[in-house]
Length: 262
Ligand code: HH2
Image (cartoon, rainbow, N blue to C red; front, side, top):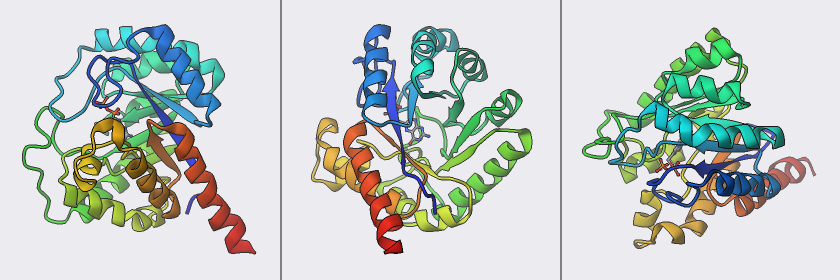
């Protein structure tokens, strides 16, 4: 059970991210929004230059670098910045200009975080973004994802990452039922001892569960899942809507810390 409720604000410097794609193409706009998220209470701003939504095509690392580096460099003096990438050269360059966490949806970059002595997020994904939602299948989704994450976390610690989080990868090669099973199993994942990060913000399963709400109409559902996750004891939630997610985290901390001690 974490004694904090961190919010990681999402900042996609991409033309095609499923929610904020195209909004922050201009580096100055992206930096302004990142600063605003810090002002709203984001503990971390997560900068990404490649959409990994279902069906997304891979981006050349050179193009990814062009998108993210100016933004990471400008934001890093103002707060903690993570780099959301699957490419070692992008992770390394972002750290060289101030990122202190490698947020790795491929769970293959622990050696980079370890060598550079920075934080590391290992996320679970089945398959790859272009096809991962075609036919996700597991014998036992909770056991498989938790087992995978335990192994990746141990590896990242052995390799020297300064801090390690595990993330069940909501929506990454998962049906609605898989996502719900993983959310229901958060208390177990928290009990395993590695700090947990969860990213459900505005994702497709929330639309499906709320009568077809469009991406921009998933605020309440996103905050509801964030509240659930914090109440389960996760350390951090990745969110597009930072301010209400920070409020949710504060409330849960108030109940679980102050309320439980009264
Ligand atoms: N989800 C997305 C991207 N990165 N990283 C972690 N650790 N956990 C997540 O759940 C996660 C993530 C996908 O969301 P988004 O960045 O908003 O969209 P896109 O991939 O289209 O850029």
